[in-house]
Image (cartoon, rainbow, N blue to C red; front, side, top):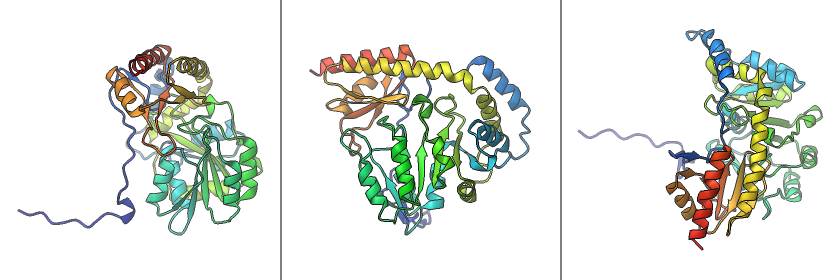
Length: 358
């Protein structure tokens, strides 16, 4: 029996490739910028006690207000200046929904997180690219000149940038905020590893919103929690487009415990920073490898025939991220900073591959 046909999907989906983190099984997982350490056992027990109090037959607090209050207090803000989302990914889509759309423009700074441009496309928003310089720093004067044309509706500055690890200077962000009325999102998903934030600029600039996440420093990639800091009127616009009940009650409970105990994650964060320096030094000693310094929990490096090198590493049980077919990142791979043992396994495998290819 012949099946009926189905109407075509929305035209903006034509040719669009789904986001694929290439999350494959491996002995050494260093591809997704996760924290190599899980939540410690004592804290897990506290989380379980909190979760057991959650009534699973009831809908969660739609806005996670208890968690908003905690985040607001820690950042010297009011509740209405904070919004919690289902990971940073939901909030990134929400900015495209609220400030993008047909006839509107998003300013992108490639190479950067590919989800930004994908969200713009899904919402019918035109993407205007101002590429970074050859050293991956932001072409600040070019960005300022482009926003001066007055037709940009929103832009995202990633600091540290993913996948390159570069910081945007606070001075540049301040100049940018003065130069445009476009909404400027600063994506600080990795700011705990850089110790740098543009939070002080919130007090003077209504067109600034800061994105952060629980996934990286706080070992909660599996729970899906992110949050925004911004002006109350801006946050109100985000609330208009967010999905109702997007952060479930269990995730809210987990996040409350973790955020209340965030100081306990500091030794692990420092360990990653220390390992980052050691891995960068190790990469510099491998023939044919050029590593890029980073302020995040990952390092990007360039090596000839990077796609083949990725396969060689995976054959040895090491999974890193391949960016070699991405514009501006030809022959580039990115490695997450793992445990000392994981990092040693990666460096040993890469050295073996590099020497074999000489």
